[in-house]
Amino acid sequence: MFTLSKEKYLIFFLPLLVLSCSQMGKGVKPKGWVGDSPVLSERDQKASLAYHHYILAQLKGHEGNLEETIDELRRALAYDPRSAFLHVELARLYIRKGLTTEAIAECEEALTIDKNFVPAHVVLGGLYSTLKKNSSAIEHYQEALRIDPKNQQAYIYLGSLYRESQQYDKAIEILKRLIDESPNNIMGLYYLGRIHAEMKRFDESIDYYERVLSVKPDFISGLIDLGTIYEIQKKPEMAIETYQKVLKIDSENRAALERLGQLYVKGDQWEDALNQYREIQKFDSEDLDIRVKMGLVYFEQGNYDDAILEFSFVLASNPKDDKVRFYLATAYLKRENHEQAITEYMKIPAESTLYVDSRENAAFILEDLGKLDEAIDLLDRSIQIKPKEIGLYLLLSSFYETGKQVEKALEVVTRAHQLDEKNTDLLFRMGILYDKLGKFEEMVRRMREVITLNPEHADALNYLGYTFADKGIHLDEALELVQKALKLKPESGYITDSLGWVYYRKGEYKKAIRELEKAIELTPDDPIIREHLGDSYLKVNLVEKALELYEKALQLKPKEDQLNRLRKKIKEIKTKKGEAP
Image (cartoon, rainbow, N blue to C red; front, side, top):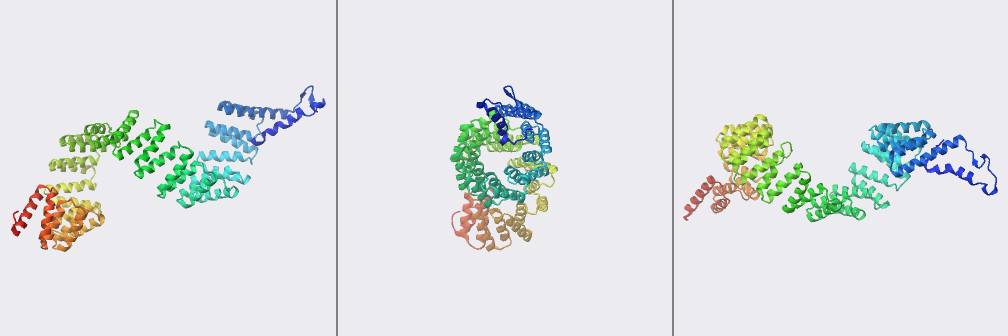
């Protein structure tokens, strides 16, 4: 019966070798010989044939012929069906072939022969783990360790299984038992490092990785994981140093080159990032993902021509990559090649997640080129294709407003509102348009709807509060609304201006001046804020300051109605001073 372990199989032939060589020089035939040949028992003959086919299986395996390897191992089992070792070896081959059921059957057969055969338990543990039958896998790993408490494979696999199911405490306990048995076990230390990292216990994780690297400084997986932890800890310099160590060991390590490239991108070190990606190109020149990354780096550098080249190369190989086409269109836009930008945006199909963005961008370009009617037509056609995309309606409405077709703008958002009656963006837009049409009560109703749906809609709070103040009505409510808006957006110069204007309307000019001076610091180029502060200075007789602000506001290109108002105020001040206006 062929029951020897793999490590001891050579012992099998030793008796035969001794038998064939002993006493040859004496001319005496050993016992059991007939004529010139030894006589083997039937048991020994079967064992010899089993071993013969096992060796043939090994040779076929080295040749890479899986089918013939399996055939030879089956022949070996035919001569020694009670060999637990051979059953497990056959199971391993079945695993390579993807025959999981057959592999399990062979391991179970091995255990009926020898229930304490550890390799069968270990292989079965792996099979059940693959099938997500974790409880069965754990049972076999535990049994392997009961039989052989020093079996390192079982410790590693069991610890890994606990880790995958996030039973971290059990995983740590098992792996620490392994480290107690074998303090320098690299995989045990490595998995302890990974587990502590997953538990976000990064300092302990680093300790384990450093222990791994003290034993095996060129252990690349440990270095990559350690670099990742440094990234998580916001220690880019240490991460970079760690990845550079990987490249000293393996100059073509893809993970290290990519991680370095990404770190350099985050640090705006564009040339260093490009150098990493160029290294990858040396051994993988057709990698499209790297070309996309290089294109994005060129884009960030403002090198739009090279960005266009990279994106175009990718699209030549993969013309259906909508994201890259969007990048290409945007690079053309930055290059001020507007027609080509529109062409590329328009190639993005309706089923793409970038369809709406592409059409909106194309419409913006047309508007900038003074082709407002074409922009409106494009958005109309896009809405026909995507009738539920609210963003398209909002943009179309704004274009109609730009073209001074406010009624049409309101009609568009009203149509969209029927699709989504609780959309606060639509309600807010409707309120603004009603205001422009002089429908004050409708504006108030819409703004109150927005605030009811979203009490923290800072823009609606501000708009309603400012409008009340501008009309000199509901000033206490206006103050409350604007103060709430400012809490939500404390750095907004426009909302700060609204608060100052409420105080102005309430006659609290010192408070108005305080807030309006803050508003100008936050938003220095707005002519209305400067006019408001000028009005407040005028109320406390700071005439020169008021005049200075009005004149500065004139330089900021105000709209026509404000322009006329400012000129009138300047004229009045200069007339009172006896100066020529």
